[in-house]
Image (cartoon, rainbow over all chains, first blue to last red):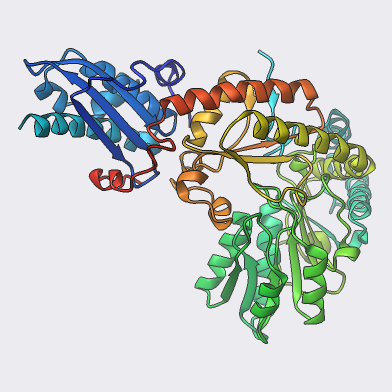
Length: 124
Length: 402
C-alpha cells in the first residue's frame, strides 16, 4: 500500500488543523469499520458562505489527509455547494487513495454534512 | 537520510557472513541433492552440515530437523500433520488466542473439518494460565500448540511448564519458536516439546526457509506430498543455498546469543524508560520482564498507530503497529484485544523491535522524535481526557466499506 505525494503532503503538513473558537457548525462522525473519528468546525456567514473550516481527526494518514483536503476544498463555498462534496471529489484531489482507505474520504464528506446540519439546526 | 530500522521482529537483514556462505550454492554447487553424481552429492553433504548446525542451536539431533519453505509452513505442517495423524484418537486441539495467524488459521481450518479447538485466553500481560490449560485438556485432546514468544507484545510463555503438563498427559506439544530463536535460549530437550517451528529470516538469514523440529519417532502426516526429500517427510527439491544460509545464521545466533541478548535488553530498557518517562499516557504492552530482549510495544492514548508509523517513516524510522489501519483487515490486532485493550486503545499501538546493529544514539533519536510526533498527533485528535470516544458518532456514519 502506498500513498500519493499529495496524501503525504496533506498528512505531514495538514491544512486547517484545530478548532475554530466561534464556529457555528460542528460535526463529528466515526467509522464503525476501523474506529476513525473526524470532527469538522465551520464558520458560516449570514450569506451561507463557509468563511473558515477546520478539523480534528483521530485516524490514519488517509483520514488526516482527507480531512485536510476536504476542509480546504469547501472554504469560500456556499453550504449548498459544500454539502454536495462527494468523497470521490476528495479522493481525486488527493491523487487517489488505496482501496482499503476509501472509507476515510467518505468520513470527511459525512463530517462536513454533519457540521452543515448542525449549523442549520442551530439556526432553525 | 539515515534509516533506523526498528522492525526486527518482522524481518532482519541477511548477515554478510551468511550471504557469503550462500552464494556458492547458487552458482557452483548447484546440483540437485537427490542426484547421484558429484554435483548432487556435494549439495547433499552440505545440507547435512547445515542440518547439524540447526540441531546444535536447539539441542536436537540432526535427524529431527526438517527444512520447510517458511515458519508458516512449519506451523501448518505441525498442526495439520498431527491432527490428521491422530483424528481416530481424538479431535480436540488446544492453542491460545494470541498465536500467529499461521497457527490460528490452521486451527480454524481444522474446525471446518470437524476438529474442536480451545483458544486459551491470556492475562493482561499476555501469559496463558497453566490452570486454564489443565482444565482445557480432555480425553480426546491430541495436540497443544502454544507459541514460545509472542511476535507483537514479546511476552514469553512458560513453555517448559506447559511441556511438562502436556507430556504427563501423553499429548503432542508444538511450539512456534519463530520469534524465540536468536533472542532467548531454545533447547528442545529442556522444554519438553515434540514439535517446534523456526524461520531463518528472523535471525539474519534469508526469507523463504524454515524448519520444523520433529521429535524422533513422533508419527506425523505429511503436508507437502511428492518426492522422497527430507526423509520422505517433506517433498520438494531442497533449497540448498538457503538451507546453508539458515545453518550459518543459526550457528552465528547461538554463538553470540548472550552478547546479543545483553545488547538488545540494554537498548530495549533505554527505549522503554525513555518513552514511558517522556510521553504522558503511554503504556507498555506485554510482560515487563518475561519479554523478548528486543521487543518494545506501546499504546499511546488518543491517537492512531498508522499515523505514528507514517510520521516515523518520514524521519527515517521503521516500526510497526497493531492498528486496524495497518492490518489491511480493518480489525485491530487480535493480540492487543486478547490482553484486554479496548479497540480504540489498540488502535494507537506502536511496536519497535531492536536488532544487532541498533545503537544507543538510535534510541535517543527515536525517543526524542517520538515525543514530538505523539504531541503533534494528539493536538490533531478530537479525543482527549475531556472528550472521550463517544460511541454515538459511529451511528452517524452508515458506511461499512470493507
